[in-house]
Length: 201
Ligand SMILES: [Zn+2]
Image (cartoon, rainbow, N blue to C red; front, side, top):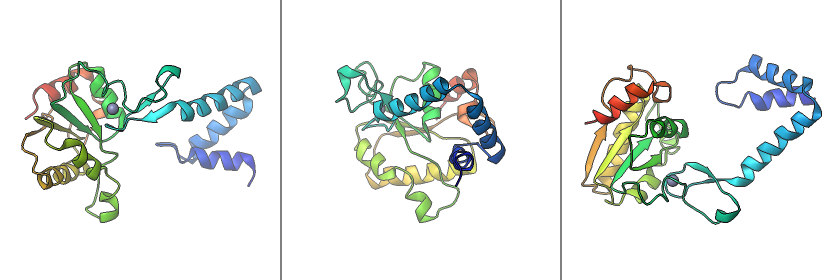
């Protein structure tokens, strides 16, 4: 396959990128000076070498020379965070959105997706087993912060079922209404997100 086609095909694997956008990306790169594309290649390589997945919450974090052996992200290793509070989110961008409002002081867990159907292979894509291992009744409250969509609701049921399996005895709360139904947490404005978090029940 020629390299234009090959690169375009790789770009279509990116979230939200369709064929047309992928093509534009390729022609954009062709027009760039070689130093620019070399820099681009280096940054991607560096990203893969320096970014680790947190062993607790699965949040990717950057390590520097002093902490190459770190296994926990800055949030999980921050002693000031409330270790009784766990917030379950679907993906990294949702964690970022909640973190940005600076109102949540507990820990996070990135579930890795939501399910549209109750098919086993879809359910297996979620980190439910990992969640059970992490919880072990160490938390007094677990906030299920998923999108107010059908998928979010179906996934909440699975989370509650998983927590029941390990006899979790703390509180389970959900974000308050406010994020438009069918809307996405990652795009909610800070004020809406803040009131959804503080009004959780
Ligand atoms: Zn972490």
